Amino acid sequence: MNAALQMIGLRGKLRYDEPLSRHTTWRIGGPADRYYQPADIDDLAEYLSQLPEGESVFWLGLGSNLLVRDGGIRGSVIAISGMLNALQQVGDKRLRVEAGVSCAKVAREAARAGLVGAEFLAGIPGTLGGALAMNAGAFGGETWPIVSVVETMNRHGVRRTRTAGDYRIGYRSVQGPAGEWFVTAELQLQLGDTAAAQVRIRELLAKRSETQPTKQANAGSVFRNPEGDFAARLIEACGLKGVCEGAACVSEKHANFIINTGGATAVQVEALIRRVADTVEREQGVRLVREVHVVGEVL
Image (cartoon, rainbow, N blue to C red):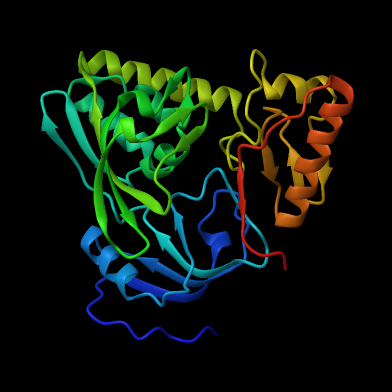
């Protein structure tokens, strides 16, 4: 058991040695030393301001696009999904969204408000905070083209407002001021037809269900698409669909997904990722770049 922190005035929930397998979409991951669910942004700032100077901090959304190693994460994990969950319209064409709101909810609420341009977010299985951090995309859309302003918080709980111009945005890549995390964003959308937007969202979700293993434990796309090609095509061309390392298997439905068929470990997933990348490089001459983030300690 990790030593309890002496903290005052907190309104959120603090747990010790929390298994992160409960909070990742792969259902894999060792314990977090401390797992904090803030009551709101002000409470989050209070928690961070009271942490010991040497305490590391990891921010966790819905746990997609993430492999937590079997030894878990030292320090504090900040769990924002369902906590930093406010969303409001702040202008005719703008939404202010906190980082813990799911991308799917952003898409739905934007459509309900008669705003278009965020429908693609329905295909991203994570929070807006995660989408901001990696410029997540789906169905031809990307996150940052609809972002105007963000609010960040640093390791000490200090908040700053920044514009999209403060960041260098690329394909699944965001570079900006170090040591800051996104807590809110203002999205600039366009006026449109609610019914048409809702139809588009349903179409995108149906396409996702048809082409991806949405009913099996996975973390989303494992590799980035190489320029001018698709990772799934390269993997499938190598005959790797269905290949397994222990209980971790390349999906038969979509070759760029690895599924946990039951009881898979992070060691098995990492071994399968290496095997796939090595095989594609040897047979196709392309070195795939991992999209999934790997964090934590080896058991």
